[in-house]
Length: 292
Image 1 (cartoon, rainbow, N blue to C red):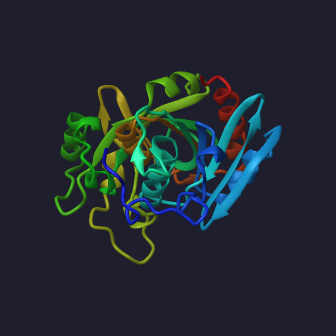
Image 2: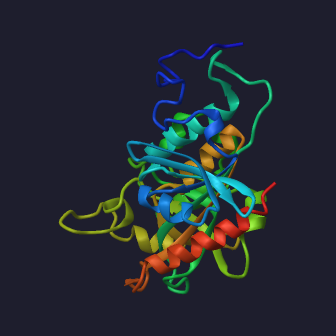
C-alpha cells in the first residue's frame, strides 16, 4: 500500500491536519460549510452543546449537538482554491490513517452542506429566497488538475460553451451534479433549484465593472438564458462547483444551499441580508437532523 509522503500530507506537531488544525475525532461526518468565519458562531449558537472548537487562519470549526444530531460547522473562506484545501484535508481525516500515512481499507462518506450567500441570475428568483444548487458549474478551472472526467456532465458543459460562445483562453467550464441523497432531504417547495455558477473572482468573473472593462460584457446575459433539459442557471457564487467536484471524486455527498441577497437581473439587494441567512441556517439545521 502506497505511503503518503510528509510533503504531500502535512501534519501539525500534534498530528492534526495542517490547515484545518483538526484530528479525526474533532469532526462529525455531517458537516456544514460557510464562507465567513463569523457565520460559524451564528450557526453554533443553535447547538444544544459544543464539544470542540478550533481556528487556524480562516478555517474556523465548531463541533456540537443539535437536536440529538452531532454536527460540525466549518468556515472555508472564499474561492475554489480554499475548497481544494478543505475537501482534501477533511477526506484525509476520515479516509487516511494519519499515523501510518496510508489509505484506509474501509471508506467513510461525509455529508457536506454549504450554507452561503449568493446573487440570483433570474428575475423571478427574488432576494431573500433560498436556492439549492442542482448542479455546480465551475468557471475557475480548479477541477481540471484532477482526473475528473468521469464525474463531469460533459454534454451539459459543451452546451454551455456553445450557448455562451465561451472564449478558448478562459478555463474550460466544468459541471458536476449534487448529491441526490442530500437533495431529497433539503429540497422542498420553499426552495428554488437550478445550476449554481462558481466564478473564480468577485468582480470581473461575475460581470461587475468598476474601472476595468470586461472581455465579454454580455456574459452574464448569456448565462442567465442558459438552460439544459429544463434546468436553468439560478445563481452565481464562488465555491459550489469545487465542492461538488471534489466530493464526487472523493466519494462524499455534497449539496449547496444559498440565501439570495442580491438579484443581478433586476439589480436589487436585500434590505436585511442577515434575515434570509438566519432563515436558511435554521431551515438547513432542521433538515440535517434527518441525515443517516
